[in-house]
Image (cartoon, rainbow, N blue to C red):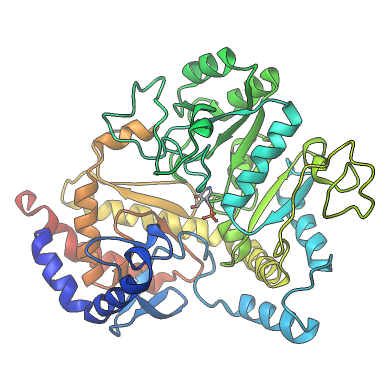
Length: 460
Ligand SMILES: Cc1ncc(COP(=O)(O)O)c(C=O)c1O
């Protein structure tokens, strides 16, 4: 089954989506509100969703493994979340107070219970915003204004972090000391120069770069599972923790993808490492726009309006000597978002272990389909996030290993699966939810059974 043939069927199957995209292109660049939604030749447009299912504008039903890029861990339209939102609106009478309210502290108490590294938290409206705040906190705390990040790690559209997320082979530089490569036009040159790029799972090389520039680097930010799926090896995270302590660098775990994906306490709980700061988003907001920064009181406390002058907080403008670290936002701590988040955490407490077990079984069953045909596929990931990767490599340790992964074949498979009613954005991770029941999984395995032999005709 070739891509060209697939494409014909894709267009036949998605005429209304095509029409929608043509309309959208007239009024939005590329027809998009976020470039991540784009894929070739055009993405499907969705009309409604329920549980594990998406229904597109052409009237087709799909089992959804994208799940809002991992945000919807309860699936679409979960009843508990729905009723928490309804209750917020009907009993409490509004969806925005603009003042402190009870859910703000209640939610923080819950997070502190799951994440022992957190002594205090602040809310934002996205993972990107959470990382912006975390960087500023680290800089204020250390008085050092450069940053270190890892090649292949995404932290949102921030000039100093949108660097070497996806560099091509020619630009990337050496594997042990990667180049800084911009991932967007229009980035601040200075921000670029202020960021060091490190190789994940290569402790000695990280140690060298961080030690050489310790006088300038105030923050080290890491996705503790690279790209949400690749595990740290040989005490890598523990060693980074010890080193950053020694060098007075604030260690930030970006758990926006992984926050509740490996269990209730994040990747840090799994590997028993307490970062100075943690950022979260996606799952923790129950599918609404949300972000969290949490961490040590001595760092978090810098945002307090009791700790210094803040022009929004202080009426008396005369005493401006000591500034607080500015953090505000009209929608921070939005009642509807916190209601959805709390309901999500309630359900996850009940369902987490079942979901983790079900995901492991699903991964083994998928791998078994390929094994039957002696084909190299690995379902790589920990917890309820994983990716289907075509590679002969025994293990994947960082971004450079993806050179050995057949991404084109994966896209081709995703297209073929799409025709069988299985949806994931081509090439993306599988994000499991409590709505992926036995029936959905069985149907998916059957689709794989049908599609896999057609992808590797010579092997059969
Ligand atoms: C690890 C990580 N950090 C930060 C972000 C940015 O979060 P948001 O899209 O909510 O701004 C993402 C989004 O995918 C992410 O995966």
